[in-house]
Image (tube, rainbow, N blue to C red):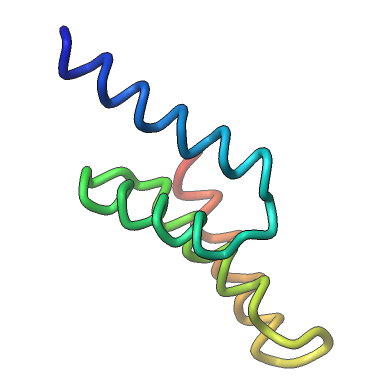
Length: 77
């Protein structure tokens, strides 16, 4: 039970940091790595969000990133 509580505390720390600093890419990437290490599928969604955020508006790459994000979101439902 202690291990579960520690995981919940660690994740809450990330969530708090993301809430307090929503545009901090470093926090997002660290959280993404943490999720991936645990096999959490939310990492795919976060990675797709970051990819979308990093692409230039009004480009083919942005539209492709938007489609990937939509596909990942639909797979996680």
